[in-house]
Image (cartoon, rainbow, N blue to C red):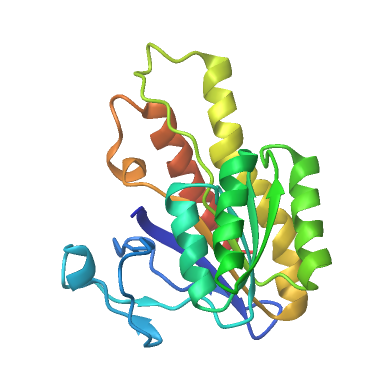
Length: 231
């Protein structure tokens, strides 16, 4: 599980871009494949996650047949998101830089009757971002949901990480999401429907002594997401 996401919703008109989950709500979403998620439109989370039972439920973000790009889909949370979206009938364009693990995720989904295309990409590079969006449109003719999940974590103190290493981490954790958001927003406007989910982390709110670069990148990602509200 990651920090409750700041989610951007685009639906019903050119200017209908707004948050569907309050920034300060502290919500959490569980994409672990062994968790049985109810089929209601609103998904309760308190019993499944063991967090504050007073938190509001999370609205389902996808419908059957929607096209979703999931970055970092080769393992961990990204693979779990991909599995869950497949169960909901989404058509998937999966991205990661590890070809073997990415293809394993795609094969798993396709072997159970889902639709998943794998694209090996370094999405900190604009050329790879452009190719990823093009691949989704070529494969499915549409793009509805963007899940910016890919991320790196450096477990070193501020004295131990140098400037170039910090910049490299920002490229993956922040720049990639910026580039993808920029590419998909106009597509979603034209279709008058879209969802952007940017994965954050608890460290963005409380700080991390041994991962300050990671915490900073996620804090910046949340700020970017909030800024998209005003487009």
